[in-house]
Length: 232
Ligand code: URA
View 1 (tube, protein in one colour):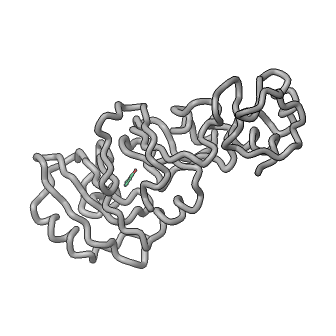
View 2 (cartoon, helix red, strand yellow):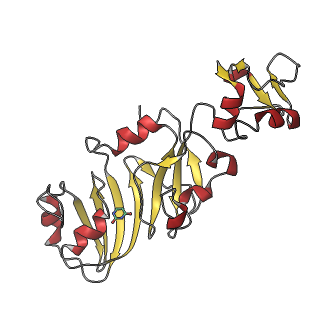
View 3 (cartoon, helix red, strand yellow):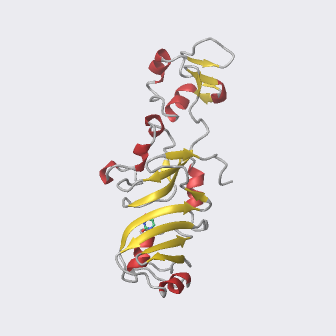
């Protein structure tokens, strides 16, 4: 059982203070009962709540796979510019816990990013102990030489300012200036820094895979829901 005003506020319907007005403006009832709820302080079973005839919007949480365009940041800080959360419905942006990204993609990187309000999942999937492979497609300012393959695979590349070398990474050469790099970790600007350590600048970067997940069927700027139990 949850307090009604808190439940509505946490799911982004209104502020906690605005719950009384929300109840005046919307038909909020419990299934099997026609009495309209007007007391925002009562405790209710979220499963039974109907708002204008609709059940609650994802009361147990959200797990989303987003196809991020370039130009959007994963930070919530408005000063950093437009963010990936602007792709979501307005109500979801008012949820508490807040929807946040599982790891980050740079503003200039496009592709697959997961968003969720399941805080323990964020911690679990971003922990260094979690080694889910992430595949990136990069275009570079120069030729990618075959000799880079064993260098990235060796697990000895030490990036500037870091104490531990990068974990072994799988490099595939796709064309003269195109490569796919699969990482099992997620350090700051890692792909760009790994290539930069070998004199190459990443011109475009796209994440096409996160573990078994791909962007198939999700156009750029769109998202799809995943079952909350996906990573169980
Ligand atoms: N590596 C990068 O350099 N940038 C990203 O956005 C992701 C991985």
